[in-house]
Image (cartoon, rainbow, N blue to C red; front, side):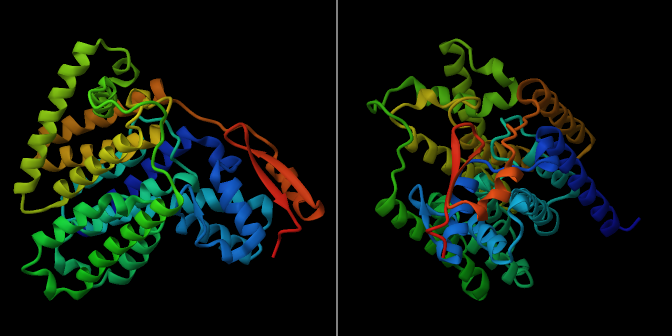
Amino acid sequence: MKPSGIKRLLFLFSLFFSIAALYYLRPDAFSNPQFWGEEGSVFFADAYHYGFKSLFNVCHGYHQLFPRFIACSAQLIQIPYEYIPTVYVYSWLMVLITLISYIWFRLEIDNAKKIFISLILVIIPLQSEIIMNLTNVQWLLALFPVIIFSNSQLRNGKWFFIDLLILIFAGLTAPNFTILIPLFVFLLLKERKTIYQNKRRLTLFFLSIIFGLIELVSLLVNGDITRSEGTFKLFNFGFIKYFFLEYAYLFLGKSAIGLPAILIIIGGILFLLIIIYLLIKTYKSEKIFGFVALVSGMLFWIASVIAYRQEPESLNPYFTAPRNFYIPSVTFLWALVFIFKTNLRTIILFSGLILLFLIETIIFVGRRTFVDYSWKTYARRIPKQDTLKIPINPPGWFIEIDNSKKE
Protein backbone atom coordinates (compact mmCIF):
# COMPACT_ATOMS: atom_id res chain seq x y z
CA MET A 1 0.00 0.00 0.00
CA LYS A 2 1.22 3.51 -0.83
CA PRO A 3 2.23 5.78 2.12
CA SER A 4 -0.77 8.02 1.41
CA GLY A 5 -3.07 4.98 1.60
CA ILE A 6 -1.58 3.91 4.93
CA LYS A 7 -2.00 7.45 6.21
CA ARG A 8 -5.70 7.52 5.29
CA LEU A 9 -6.25 4.11 6.86
CA LEU A 10 -4.61 5.21 10.11
CA PHE A 11 -6.59 8.44 10.04
CA LEU A 12 -9.84 6.48 9.74
CA PHE A 13 -8.70 4.21 12.57
CA SER A 14 -8.12 7.30 14.76
CA LEU A 15 -11.62 8.55 13.99
CA PHE A 16 -13.24 5.17 14.63
CA PHE A 17 -11.36 4.64 17.90
CA SER A 18 -12.19 8.17 19.12
CA ILE A 19 -15.89 7.87 18.33
CA ALA A 20 -16.01 4.44 19.98
CA ALA A 21 -14.40 5.93 23.10
CA LEU A 22 -16.93 8.78 23.06
CA TYR A 23 -19.76 6.27 22.82
CA TYR A 24 -18.41 4.47 25.88
CA LEU A 25 -18.05 7.72 27.86
CA ARG A 26 -21.36 9.32 26.85
CA PRO A 27 -23.69 6.71 25.31
CA ASP A 28 -26.79 8.84 25.80
CA ALA A 29 -25.25 11.67 23.78
CA PHE A 30 -25.77 9.42 20.74
CA SER A 31 -29.09 7.83 21.72
CA ASN A 32 -30.80 10.65 23.63
CA PRO A 33 -28.97 14.00 23.23
CA GLN A 34 -29.78 16.65 25.82
CA PHE A 35 -28.69 20.17 26.70
CA TRP A 36 -25.85 20.79 29.12
CA GLY A 37 -25.67 24.07 31.00
CA GLU A 38 -25.30 27.22 28.94
CA GLU A 39 -25.98 25.54 25.61
CA GLY A 40 -29.61 25.33 26.69
CA SER A 41 -30.08 28.12 29.23
CA VAL A 42 -28.13 30.70 27.20
CA PHE A 43 -27.37 29.70 23.60
CA PHE A 44 -30.69 28.05 22.76
CA ALA A 45 -32.75 30.50 24.81
CA ASP A 46 -31.10 33.58 23.27
CA ALA A 47 -31.34 32.18 19.75
CA TYR A 48 -35.01 31.36 20.32
CA HIS A 49 -35.88 34.81 21.64
CA TYR A 50 -33.60 37.06 19.58
CA GLY A 51 -32.31 35.05 16.60
CA PHE A 52 -29.03 36.22 15.02
CA LYS A 53 -29.14 39.40 17.11
CA SER A 54 -27.74 37.21 19.90
CA LEU A 55 -24.71 36.10 17.86
CA PHE A 56 -22.28 38.41 19.63
CA ASN A 57 -23.98 38.48 23.02
CA VAL A 58 -21.62 38.20 25.98
CA CYS A 59 -21.93 35.59 28.72
CA HIS A 60 -19.53 35.28 31.68
CA GLY A 61 -17.73 38.30 30.26
CA TYR A 62 -16.79 36.91 26.86
CA HIS A 63 -18.23 35.94 23.47
CA GLN A 64 -19.20 32.42 22.37
CA LEU A 65 -19.32 32.85 18.61
CA PHE A 66 -19.25 29.22 17.52
CA PRO A 67 -21.97 27.78 19.81
CA ARG A 68 -24.14 30.85 19.22
CA PHE A 69 -23.66 30.49 15.45
CA ILE A 70 -24.85 26.88 15.66
CA ALA A 71 -27.78 27.86 17.89
CA CYS A 72 -28.83 30.77 15.65
CA SER A 73 -28.45 28.69 12.47
CA ALA A 74 -30.61 25.90 13.90
CA GLN A 75 -33.24 28.49 14.75
CA LEU A 76 -33.01 30.16 11.33
CA ILE A 77 -33.54 26.98 9.33
CA GLN A 78 -36.31 25.97 11.73
CA ILE A 79 -34.99 22.65 12.92
CA PRO A 80 -37.70 21.11 15.14
CA TYR A 81 -36.96 21.98 18.75
CA GLU A 82 -36.89 18.36 19.86
CA TYR A 83 -33.87 17.73 17.58
CA ILE A 84 -31.80 20.79 18.47
CA PRO A 85 -29.81 19.03 21.25
CA THR A 86 -28.84 16.48 18.57
CA VAL A 87 -27.57 19.31 16.36
CA TYR A 88 -25.51 20.67 19.25
CA VAL A 89 -24.00 17.28 20.12
CA TYR A 90 -23.00 16.51 16.53
CA SER A 91 -21.66 20.04 16.03
CA TRP A 92 -19.23 19.31 18.86
CA LEU A 93 -18.37 16.00 17.23
CA MET A 94 -17.67 17.74 13.91
CA VAL A 95 -15.22 20.05 15.70
CA LEU A 96 -13.42 17.00 17.08
CA ILE A 97 -13.33 15.33 13.65
CA THR A 98 -11.96 18.56 12.14
CA LEU A 99 -9.28 18.76 14.83
CA ILE A 100 -8.22 15.15 14.24
CA SER A 101 -8.18 15.86 10.48
CA TYR A 102 -5.90 18.85 11.10
CA ILE A 103 -3.58 16.64 13.12
CA TRP A 104 -3.37 14.12 10.30
CA PHE A 105 -3.18 16.42 7.29
CA ARG A 106 -1.45 19.49 8.67
CA LEU A 107 1.13 18.43 11.22
CA GLU A 108 4.62 17.63 9.97
CA ILE A 109 5.26 14.61 12.18
CA ASP A 110 5.22 10.88 11.48
CA ASN A 111 2.07 8.77 11.43
CA ALA A 112 2.80 6.87 14.64
CA LYS A 113 2.90 10.11 16.63
CA LYS A 114 -0.27 11.32 14.93
CA ILE A 115 -2.12 8.25 16.16
CA PHE A 116 -1.13 8.89 19.75
CA ILE A 117 -1.82 12.63 19.81
CA SER A 118 -5.19 12.02 18.11
CA LEU A 119 -6.31 9.37 20.58
CA ILE A 120 -5.19 11.43 23.58
CA LEU A 121 -7.91 13.99 22.79
CA VAL A 122 -10.66 11.59 23.87
CA ILE A 123 -9.14 8.93 26.11
CA ILE A 124 -7.32 11.28 28.47
CA PRO A 125 -8.52 10.08 31.90
CA LEU A 126 -10.38 13.20 32.99
CA GLN A 127 -14.04 13.54 33.84
CA SER A 128 -16.10 13.76 30.65
CA GLU A 129 -17.42 17.25 31.36
CA ILE A 130 -16.14 18.79 28.15
CA ILE A 131 -17.21 16.14 25.66
CA MET A 132 -20.24 16.11 23.39
CA ASN A 133 -21.64 19.53 24.31
CA LEU A 134 -21.36 23.05 22.87
CA THR A 135 -21.03 24.60 26.33
CA ASN A 136 -17.42 23.39 26.54
CA VAL A 137 -16.49 23.27 22.85
CA GLN A 138 -14.00 26.10 23.43
CA TRP A 139 -11.51 23.63 24.90
CA LEU A 140 -11.27 21.85 21.55
CA LEU A 141 -11.26 25.11 19.59
CA ALA A 142 -8.34 26.34 21.70
CA LEU A 143 -6.15 23.54 20.33
CA PHE A 144 -6.43 24.59 16.68
CA PRO A 145 -3.80 27.38 16.94
CA VAL A 146 -1.32 24.76 18.18
CA ILE A 147 -1.77 22.88 14.91
CA ILE A 148 -2.04 25.88 12.60
CA PHE A 149 1.00 27.75 13.92
CA SER A 150 3.14 24.61 14.23
CA ASN A 151 3.22 24.20 10.44
CA SER A 152 5.99 25.57 8.29
CA GLN A 153 5.15 28.83 6.56
CA LEU A 154 4.94 27.17 3.16
CA ARG A 155 2.01 24.99 4.19
CA ASN A 156 -0.28 27.87 5.10
CA GLY A 157 -1.15 28.76 1.51
CA LYS A 158 -3.82 26.29 0.39
CA TRP A 159 -5.31 26.03 3.89
CA PHE A 160 -5.52 29.78 4.46
CA PHE A 161 -9.28 30.32 4.17
CA ILE A 162 -10.12 27.23 6.25
CA ASP A 163 -7.56 28.35 8.86
CA LEU A 164 -9.06 31.81 8.81
CA LEU A 165 -12.60 30.56 9.39
CA ILE A 166 -11.49 28.28 12.22
CA LEU A 167 -9.46 31.01 13.91
CA ILE A 168 -12.41 33.42 13.72
CA PHE A 169 -14.68 30.93 15.47
CA ALA A 170 -11.98 29.84 17.94
CA GLY A 171 -10.75 33.35 18.67
CA LEU A 172 -14.21 34.72 19.46
CA THR A 173 -15.34 31.74 21.52
CA ALA A 174 -14.12 32.22 25.10
CA PRO A 175 -10.95 34.15 26.08
CA ASN A 176 -8.60 31.40 24.90
CA PHE A 177 -6.71 33.62 22.46
CA THR A 178 -6.27 36.19 25.24
CA ILE A 179 -4.40 33.51 27.15
CA LEU A 180 -2.34 32.66 24.04
CA ILE A 181 -1.31 36.24 23.15
CA PRO A 182 2.21 35.79 24.65
CA LEU A 183 2.71 32.71 22.44
CA PHE A 184 1.48 34.49 19.30
CA VAL A 185 3.81 37.43 19.95
CA PHE A 186 6.76 35.11 20.66
CA LEU A 187 6.23 33.17 17.41
CA LEU A 188 5.94 36.41 15.45
CA LEU A 189 9.27 37.57 16.85
CA LYS A 190 10.82 34.15 16.24
CA GLU A 191 9.77 34.26 12.57
CA ARG A 192 10.42 37.98 12.10
CA LYS A 193 13.08 37.45 9.42
CA THR A 194 10.84 35.38 7.16
CA ILE A 195 7.24 36.07 8.19
CA TYR A 196 6.85 39.06 5.86
CA GLN A 197 7.35 36.76 2.89
CA ASN A 198 4.09 35.03 3.80
CA LYS A 199 1.33 37.63 4.09
CA ARG A 200 -1.32 35.01 4.78
CA ARG A 201 0.49 33.58 7.78
CA LEU A 202 1.16 37.10 9.03
CA THR A 203 -2.56 37.85 8.70
CA LEU A 204 -3.46 34.80 10.77
CA PHE A 205 -1.06 35.87 13.52
CA PHE A 206 -2.33 39.43 13.68
CA LEU A 207 -5.98 38.39 13.62
CA SER A 208 -5.36 35.91 16.44
CA ILE A 209 -3.79 38.66 18.54
CA ILE A 210 -6.70 41.00 17.74
CA PHE A 211 -9.23 38.35 18.76
CA GLY A 212 -7.32 37.87 22.00
CA LEU A 213 -7.42 41.61 22.68
CA ILE A 214 -11.16 41.77 21.90
CA GLU A 215 -11.88 39.09 24.49
CA LEU A 216 -9.54 40.75 26.97
CA VAL A 217 -11.45 44.03 26.67
CA SER A 218 -14.74 42.13 26.91
CA LEU A 219 -13.59 40.45 30.13
CA LEU A 220 -12.40 43.72 31.63
CA VAL A 221 -15.68 45.46 30.80
CA ASN A 222 -18.23 42.69 31.36
CA GLY A 223 -16.66 39.88 33.33
CA ASP A 224 -14.66 38.70 36.28
CA ILE A 225 -11.93 36.09 35.95
CA THR A 226 -12.01 35.18 39.65
CA ARG A 227 -13.43 31.67 40.15
CA SER A 228 -12.85 31.19 43.87
CA GLU A 229 -13.47 32.92 47.17
CA GLY A 230 -11.16 33.62 50.06
CA THR A 231 -8.00 35.59 50.73
CA PHE A 232 -5.06 35.43 48.34
CA LYS A 233 -1.92 33.94 49.90
CA LEU A 234 1.23 33.79 47.81
CA PHE A 235 2.66 30.82 49.72
CA ASN A 236 -0.45 28.68 49.49
CA PHE A 237 0.20 24.94 49.38
CA GLY A 238 -2.77 24.72 47.01
CA PHE A 239 -0.61 26.05 44.16
CA ILE A 240 1.84 23.17 44.57
CA LYS A 241 -1.00 20.70 44.94
CA TYR A 242 -2.70 21.94 41.78
CA PHE A 243 0.54 21.76 39.78
CA PHE A 244 1.19 18.23 41.02
CA LEU A 245 -2.36 17.02 40.34
CA GLU A 246 -2.33 18.51 36.84
CA TYR A 247 0.21 15.93 35.72
CA ALA A 248 0.27 13.20 38.37
CA TYR A 249 -3.44 12.58 37.91
CA LEU A 250 -2.76 11.36 34.37
CA PHE A 251 -0.65 8.49 35.63
CA LEU A 252 -2.02 7.84 39.13
CA GLY A 253 -5.70 8.66 38.78
CA LYS A 254 -7.67 9.30 41.97
CA SER A 255 -4.84 7.87 44.06
CA ALA A 256 -2.88 11.08 43.37
CA ILE A 257 -5.42 13.14 45.31
CA GLY A 258 -4.82 11.74 48.78
CA LEU A 259 -1.02 11.58 48.83
CA PRO A 260 0.92 13.11 51.77
CA ALA A 261 2.17 16.68 51.39
CA ILE A 262 5.82 15.63 51.20
CA LEU A 263 5.15 13.34 48.24
CA ILE A 264 3.15 16.09 46.53
CA ILE A 265 6.10 18.49 46.92
CA ILE A 266 8.61 15.94 45.65
CA GLY A 267 6.30 15.02 42.77
CA GLY A 268 5.74 18.68 41.93
CA ILE A 269 9.50 19.28 41.73
CA LEU A 270 9.87 16.20 39.52
CA PHE A 271 7.19 17.35 37.09
CA LEU A 272 8.67 20.85 37.03
CA LEU A 273 12.04 19.39 36.01
CA ILE A 274 10.34 17.29 33.32
CA ILE A 275 8.58 20.36 31.91
CA ILE A 276 11.80 22.39 31.89
CA TYR A 277 13.50 19.52 30.06
CA LEU A 278 10.63 19.33 27.56
CA LEU A 279 10.75 23.09 26.96
CA ILE A 280 14.48 22.96 26.21
CA LYS A 281 14.21 19.81 24.10
CA THR A 282 11.25 21.00 22.02
CA TYR A 283 12.66 24.51 21.56
CA LYS A 284 15.85 23.10 20.06
CA SER A 285 13.91 20.92 17.62
CA GLU A 286 13.68 21.96 13.97
CA LYS A 287 9.91 21.44 14.15
CA ILE A 288 8.10 23.63 16.66
CA PHE A 289 4.98 21.57 17.33
CA GLY A 290 6.11 20.20 20.69
CA PHE A 291 7.22 23.61 21.93
CA VAL A 292 4.05 25.39 20.79
CA ALA A 293 1.91 22.69 22.42
CA LEU A 294 3.75 22.74 25.74
CA VAL A 295 3.81 26.55 26.02
CA SER A 296 0.09 26.69 25.17
CA GLY A 297 -0.67 24.26 27.97
CA MET A 298 1.46 26.15 30.48
CA LEU A 299 -0.30 29.41 29.59
CA PHE A 300 -3.67 27.78 30.25
CA TRP A 301 -2.37 26.39 33.54
CA ILE A 302 -1.23 29.87 34.58
CA ALA A 303 -4.64 31.28 33.60
CA SER A 304 -6.34 28.71 35.87
CA VAL A 305 -4.03 29.64 38.74
CA ILE A 306 -4.93 33.30 38.29
CA ALA A 307 -8.65 32.48 38.18
CA TYR A 308 -8.47 30.29 41.32
CA ARG A 309 -5.70 32.23 43.04
CA GLN A 310 -7.75 32.83 46.19
CA GLU A 311 -8.43 29.13 46.73
CA PRO A 312 -6.15 27.01 44.51
CA GLU A 313 -6.46 23.99 46.79
CA SER A 314 -10.07 23.63 45.63
CA LEU A 315 -8.98 22.68 42.14
CA ASN A 316 -9.46 18.99 41.67
CA PRO A 317 -10.18 16.93 38.51
CA TYR A 318 -13.29 15.39 40.01
CA PHE A 319 -14.80 18.27 41.90
CA THR A 320 -14.19 21.90 41.02
CA ALA A 321 -12.96 22.26 37.47
CA PRO A 322 -12.05 19.14 35.47
CA ARG A 323 -12.25 21.20 32.26
CA ASN A 324 -9.35 23.36 33.49
CA PHE A 325 -7.08 20.33 33.46
CA TYR A 326 -7.84 19.37 29.86
CA ILE A 327 -5.60 21.57 27.69
CA PRO A 328 -2.50 21.51 29.95
CA SER A 329 -2.78 17.71 30.19
CA VAL A 330 -3.32 17.16 26.45
CA THR A 331 -0.50 19.49 25.39
CA PHE A 332 1.91 18.03 27.96
CA LEU A 333 1.30 14.58 26.51
CA TRP A 334 1.62 15.93 22.97
CA ALA A 335 5.04 17.39 23.80
CA LEU A 336 6.06 14.16 25.53
CA VAL A 337 5.17 12.09 22.46
CA PHE A 338 6.87 14.61 20.18
CA ILE A 339 10.37 14.43 21.72
CA PHE A 340 10.78 10.67 21.28
CA LYS A 341 12.14 9.17 18.12
CA THR A 342 9.69 6.76 16.55
CA ASN A 343 10.89 3.18 16.84
CA LEU A 344 9.49 -0.12 18.07
CA ARG A 345 10.42 0.62 21.68
CA THR A 346 8.63 3.99 21.78
CA ILE A 347 5.59 2.59 19.95
CA ILE A 348 5.32 -0.10 22.65
CA LEU A 349 5.85 2.56 25.36
CA PHE A 350 3.10 4.88 24.12
CA SER A 351 0.78 1.98 23.34
CA GLY A 352 1.18 1.05 27.00
CA LEU A 353 0.36 4.65 27.95
CA ILE A 354 -2.81 4.56 25.86
CA LEU A 355 -3.76 1.27 27.52
CA LEU A 356 -3.16 2.83 30.95
CA PHE A 357 -5.45 5.73 30.07
CA LEU A 358 -8.13 3.34 28.87
CA ILE A 359 -7.95 1.40 32.15
CA GLU A 360 -8.03 4.63 34.18
CA THR A 361 -10.98 5.87 32.15
CA ILE A 362 -12.91 2.68 32.88
CA ILE A 363 -11.97 2.59 36.58
CA PHE A 364 -11.83 6.27 37.58
CA VAL A 365 -13.96 8.11 35.02
CA GLY A 366 -16.49 5.59 33.80
CA ARG A 367 -19.59 6.17 31.73
CA ARG A 368 -21.65 9.26 32.32
CA THR A 369 -25.37 9.43 31.58
CA PHE A 370 -27.34 12.64 31.88
CA VAL A 371 -30.65 12.82 33.72
CA ASP A 372 -33.50 12.45 31.23
CA TYR A 373 -35.74 15.50 31.68
CA SER A 374 -38.00 14.54 28.75
CA TRP A 375 -36.80 17.38 26.55
CA LYS A 376 -38.90 16.30 23.57
CA THR A 377 -42.08 16.57 25.62
CA TYR A 378 -41.18 20.12 26.71
CA ALA A 379 -40.04 21.01 23.17
CA ARG A 380 -43.51 20.40 21.78
CA ARG A 381 -44.95 22.81 24.36
CA ILE A 382 -42.60 25.70 23.55
CA PRO A 383 -44.73 27.34 20.82
CA LYS A 384 -47.98 26.68 22.70
CA GLN A 385 -47.27 28.33 26.06
CA ASP A 386 -46.53 31.98 26.81
CA THR A 387 -43.91 31.07 29.40
CA LEU A 388 -42.16 27.83 30.18
CA LYS A 389 -39.41 26.72 32.55
CA ILE A 390 -37.64 23.64 31.25
CA PRO A 391 -35.24 21.61 33.44
CA ILE A 392 -31.93 20.60 31.84
CA ASN A 393 -28.61 19.15 32.90
CA PRO A 394 -26.80 19.63 35.19
CA PRO A 395 -29.52 19.35 37.83
CA GLY A 396 -30.74 22.75 38.92
CA TRP A 397 -30.37 24.38 35.49
CA PHE A 398 -33.31 25.58 33.41
CA ILE A 399 -34.28 27.06 30.06
CA GLU A 400 -36.69 29.92 30.56
CA ILE A 401 -38.98 30.57 27.59
CA ASP A 402 -40.96 33.81 27.34
CA ASN A 403 -42.77 34.13 24.02
CA SER A 404 -43.46 37.81 24.64
CA LYS A 405 -39.71 38.41 24.09
CA LYS A 406 -39.55 36.48 20.82
CA GLU A 407 -38.52 38.61 17.84
